[in-house]
Image (tube, rainbow over the protein chains, first blue to last red):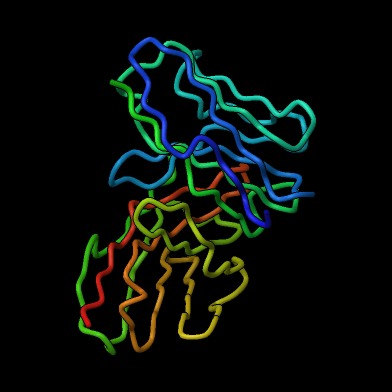
Length: 115
Length: 111
């Protein structure tokens, strides 16, 4: 497709379960970002990749969160031992250039509910 | 932490009225600022990107102004339509590989 694709769109996980969220950026986009959006809030930065290199992971809330982009295209955000406070929408975004200073294209998000 | 405030948090207007959405940011050292639209249950769509050297940017019925020195941006939507109902998010960029988002202006346009 032409846009950023995320899967699954909806995920219900039991507390303590591991989850993996996938992002297919727009083909050829160098930069890839993950954001977390709680209900009624703006998105909060999690991590940033330039091609396969994870240049900034300072927004990841704990060591239970891990992201990778091994071949510089598809990215996976993994959350281990999920907690209720992890319930949020996880948004992936990409941009053509090598920074967040360009037009950024967002996917529709993966809605995670931890019960 | 760079704080972004959007006022009003929510507003309802009758169809045809002009919309004025305000964004203020505490750190004026921005590279640029983007306005996004978010529909319920959806991701964000970039509406306008305005560089720090620009005063305004226009696209159709949308116009964004930027006053960098005072830390303010305003999004104007002319002749509002019911399809404009959404949440509008302001996001300044500080050159640190991330956008700083406000909580958004939730807009309802009443037919």
